[in-house]
Length: 237
Figure 1 (tube, one colour):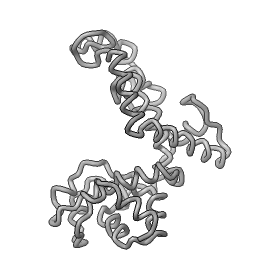
Figure 2 (figure 1 turned 135 degrees about the vertical axis):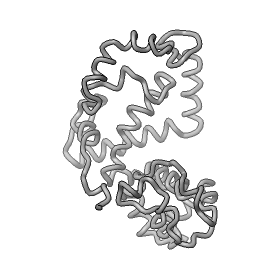
Figure 3 (figure 1 turned 90 degrees about the horizontal axis):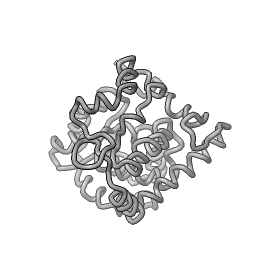
Figure 4 (figure 1 turned 45 degrees about the vertical axis):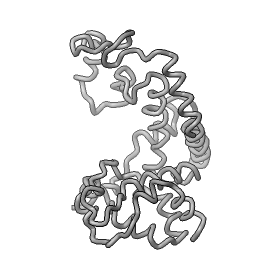
């Protein structure tokens, strides 16, 4: 067994997710992502079962491993109890660890996920925070969302949220001591180091592409990965 396969196989999620695939294609048939993307969970499993280093490396650098929505529908239908969705999580983790994610368009978007959802969890305790979903960054939300942002506190009060206030309630202010504990959890579990690597590898890719990348969401590279979407990802009818 090669080095990449060994690293994947050492992950408990890999052991849980791959038992004895029949290549029946049931996972692909039930997969919502396969309906929209050029993606087949069965193909992922087939590549892993070959233990071929070149094929696995290519997979780690491919857009394919970022199409999965982690709904785990595949687990509910597999006659052998495999979990292609779990295998995807292992592949994504190793791709980030080795910096292979920057070689695909969807992989490069991990920087955007890290700087938005990831950072908001650390800053606010929530993976989505209304005031940060700006109309400028999300024009698809339309004029209604602009109105929501302009009247955010009134809207939140009407919805019964305890927005940015202490005490119980939706979107309440998470105490600083709890946020500090959350940061320590990231430190201990490797999340902080993973975030650092995503930033480091992304800067290397930005330099390679001749694009500016700084802490701003307006920097050239960040704007590029945030807005670029090649039609090749969509499944042909």
